[in-house]
Image 1 (spheres, rainbow, N blue to C red):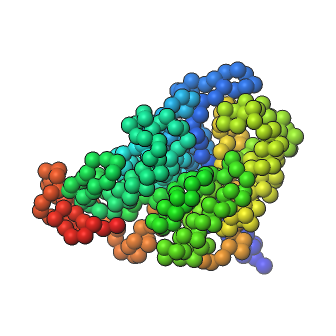
Image 2 (tube, one colour):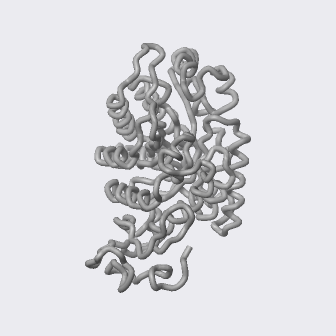
Image 3 (cartoon, rainbow, N blue to C red):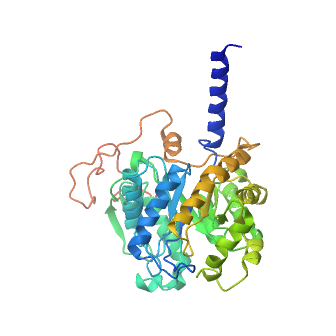
Length: 424
């Protein structure tokens, strides 16, 4: 064999390996943050809001550097959290990254106006070049409802009605709407229109509500089970319901449903060091401190504190519990962990854990299981090889109550003012 031939074979093998371990599109791996600002129990120091915001940007950038796919940011409107405006933060991160998918964890569909969600996230979609999606949820802070003029007793009906409007706003250029929880709309156009005429992909997040699994299945959207606080059996029931209803609504076989999971890990080169380093943060964390012991919590939930190999082994087993799925996110930056320690966790994830999990999940993955949805895949599904939409407005006075579509490239849709039918 010639040296050149051997070199070519080696390069080909490296290309296959790289495809399997770094760019395989079947699953997305990433991190999410709840944006807490928590005292470091080992130093007694609490970072300022400015320090924590800057640190989160560095964490997101490093996630891309180590080869992760997704960074997701929660939404909160009260101390000790800082992320009251996820789209602002994610747009800033998008400008400093090249391939990272920016998402939320979660966007509050109950207390945000769906009109503003439609506009803000379409703008983020444009600014990021399609590198975004969002997770919708009700949140876990009860007082947020009256802060935004809503009734917590209506949380579930708000979720259902507000998403019905959001879904419509992204798919119809001119919208008439009448519901229970907001003023009616007549001839309204949400701007900008979604990039390439394709709405952002939506995940519906829930930790306990079967109606949200039903909602995700009805629309053919993704379902995200946070999977950090409860035993596996709890999430198995929710995901099984979602898959069953996905098939019921005609989207395909249960295994074609789009599922995401949360997770939580803390790593060191050996498990003893990991436990010793993480224990003070666990014991004092506002989320679960002063409750079950670290050992009990690790046994009852997917929290894995140990070596990278222990994390690999634990999360490779998720497919046995939940079936093949499309997105795995890890929480690694909460409870007062200093930035240096969080960046080390990302190094473990990108350098050892995720490459191994990519190989594990790629092996024997049934052909019917879809890849993780991306903007590019949604555009292909909508247009095939044809050109995507480039929305070009006409001169318009802003009410769209009469006349043609406000856009040059489409007629007024059914359900618009003076149209026929309501549209789904």
